Image (cartoon, rainbow, N blue to C red; front, side, top):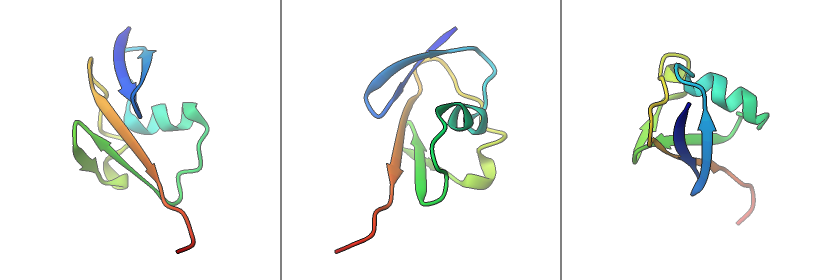
Length: 67
């Protein structure tokens, strides 16, 4: 198990989990979101190859409509 933070919340996950797998497990809508790991934005095309590591700090930002 590894420890990561997602939007300032602690999570414990198995090792060798990709960002794509983690997002799917969260069951969140992936349209209109951006994800940064350790203050670096990860392109959606790279989610399936980006492995999560111990102490990663993940920020998930959801876009909203309106003004």
